[in-house]
Image (cartoon, rainbow, N blue to C red; front, side, top):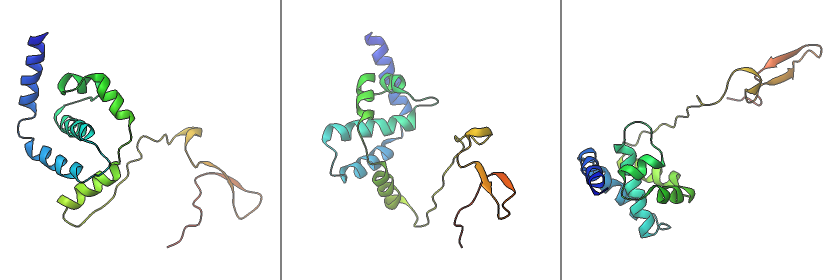
Length: 141
């Protein structure tokens, strides 16, 4: 068991080599968030660095394997709320160029068949015709 733990520690130190700058950046932003205690700060710092280091699928088992904490701790901490909006805003404002764009990728939404959100039957201006499809409501420029 200790050989495996030692191997994991060596592997993690190899993976996280060069990530000190990200670690310092995460710590500086989390320090400014008032509602987070010291244990939560250490957990979030570890988790964000792990998200940068682990290749492929990331789940609680992987976090427990490569991180400092056990799998159950990751599960319990992820149930607690965290203000990602203020974290991302502080991260962007501290290192951004001043030119920002917000993008949303709705690729996970089903777009075919009867499950398409917003798809329905709408009456046109002519009362005898009914068309299916999308309808834009209150479109103004």
